[in-house]
Length: 68
Image (cartoon, rainbow, N blue to C red):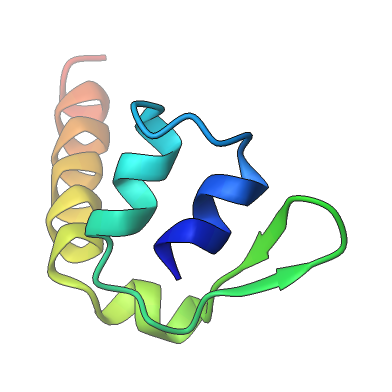
């Protein structure tokens, strides 16, 4: 899968996108067309990183509403 991901983004192994995809816990990746990557949304929403980021976003919104 790593070679395929490198091929998608242009063979640049140091690319942030490549590193992010390689370290991703999401296993439902599928390539459609030229460079379009599809991931199962349910799998993303169940991930620890997404839940953490969603909590941070909710805190930011809550704070901004309380300030004004």
